[in-house]
Image 1 (cartoon, rainbow, N blue to C red):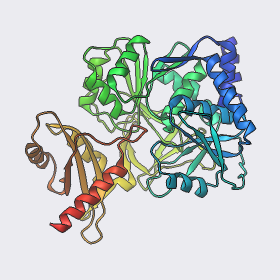
Image 2 (image 1 turned 60 degrees about the vertical axis):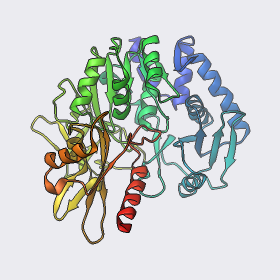
Image 3 (image 1 turned 90 degrees about the horizontal axis):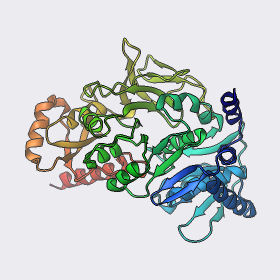
Image 4 (image 1 turned 90 degrees about the vertical axis):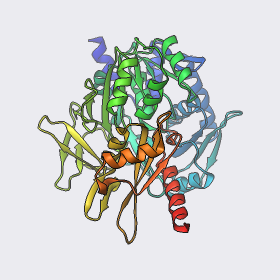
Length: 463
């Protein structure tokens, strides 16, 4: 009875600052956050938030505000503090230029930038733009991927995430005793959502400011981490770095990219007690489907069945349409983010990739997602990414970026690629890289790869 009352009370809070206050009153000495060598209890984290909120109020912060913070702790503190003063925080990705930030500010009509430098007090840079009117009780904004043009701000109410936490936390086994490890910027909605779901339950988040797997391993073992949320690219790095199994981990959940058979085998070897779940979700929506990856040889494109209460269908146009009450503000259901797929006889979603990532090569349609999976299975290839190459007169082509395994011959890999693929599927451009570039969200940085394509194309034109 008491537990049910708590769920109702948490579900009806105003925002995530109120959620932290709610937890700080009930478990003040419980560790909420551990960042490398530094730990914060719920009470300490709440004191940081109230201190920054007082500064924001004194500086007249209002409306929709970009947050430029270098550290994880400052990102989280500002995210909660601005909600406490009824502003709507939008966490900026790291590495954006001044021009890009100003473009986001102006094109989305935002009221300013909240700067959290590593040294010194936070600063507010007002934009002078009029405050927009929100039809609903929006409490935060997130940035779209910005794959074409300036990223758009997508707004969320408190309930659009918190209302689903009881469902997702049951699937991912997140509870009050959970110690969850994640890594990377909170501007990635997967990280923010996962962190808030643990705070919702009253558990503990463990993270590191460094992209160093030996430090991650030390944190996993020292704090008896039992749950991991990392995108597959980071899971692959961690799996390769571990020399001895970590038995405390009981759940690993991941999304945004697919898990290959080789990666699954490695993860099962180093996390022998863990259930591995692959989910499908979107920033505009929320969690949509999930699959339990107990068979390493499963179809990597299989993203499982819908979460309870979520409806998924395939339209006549081949796109995935989702009906869910847990979505960004201003969209109607059913909604599609322009991903393609099909539903098999068991009701599982077979992912086809983003519509814009398909290649039309002389009338033959090629999925870059399928190409990536085939290339990752080629002997000697450690990792792969594929991008479309749009050609005005000759039709579309493909550019493949490959990471060769230690000791593998690039010449042998090129021959193996031609044997593994149909002639029409063989990439027009093959570039070998020491590693795939990742952005601050842990995803393959396709903008950097596009610049490599331009350079390769220009070089060939000059030859």
